[in-house]
Image (cartoon, rainbow, N blue to C red; front, side, top):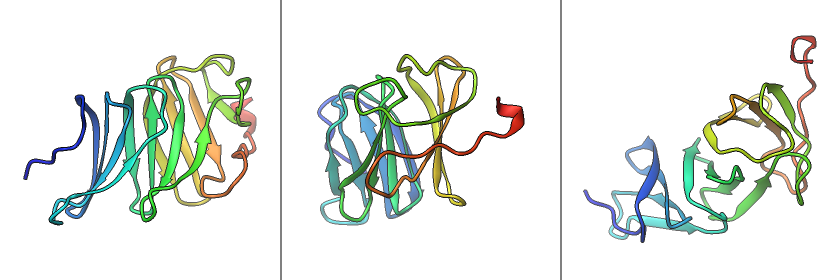
Length: 153
């Protein structure tokens, strides 16, 4: 099956199951797909300021990161953006725990991301080697940081 939809190159893909995959592209769009449907593109998710470098899903939420370091969390079911995550110090910035390396005063390209189930949170790795842990992914309002362990300080 060939899926058509991105207007520029697709730059990231995550396959959750044979009926759910998520792609991100240079066109700044995230797409949710069900390849078994007659019209396989379920949602086109827009709002990122640049090329999408990373996508991931747990089947309920999709997470995407643009080259500018902005992370968005989306409802897979509705296609609605439920959170916009940015490092502290930027307009709309969220409180975060910088657990290892990185810089809280500049946005960096996200190189990897994963959702944790307990407690519901997101871990991102960036191009500087920094790791950020984000809390409260599916609520309105800014995410809250995890409490840092003594090793993290």
